[in-house]
Amino acid sequence: MTITNALAGIAVEDIAEASDFYERLFGREPDARPMKDVAEWKLPGGGWVQVHTDADRAGAAVLTLIVDDIAEELGRLALHGLMPVSKSVGDFFKTAKFRDSDGNTIILSQPQPGTY
Image (cartoon, rainbow, N blue to C red; front, side, top):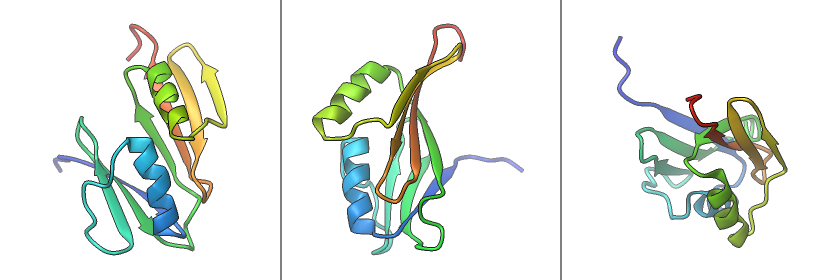
């Protein structure tokens, strides 16, 4: 098997409410709306994040996004009203954790120099 790409799925109860959060997170509207209850963002390094309506599974996702400069991203997100619920610095990564309105966990992570 050859894997050529990946799509991360995030279940939410209300696609309109969730789209507002993810548009602020990604800094843009979705790259695709293949169905009325689905919004998708293409990542620069490949892969996609798909937000879709599924009330039974809403709130159980964890998505980690690797960023070049976490301080810059936190500043940008604060300007759009998104504040992390926690931050930490470890031996390998600096991280900031966010939660969308359904409770899905979104982690921004910046590798420490020389570790990733």
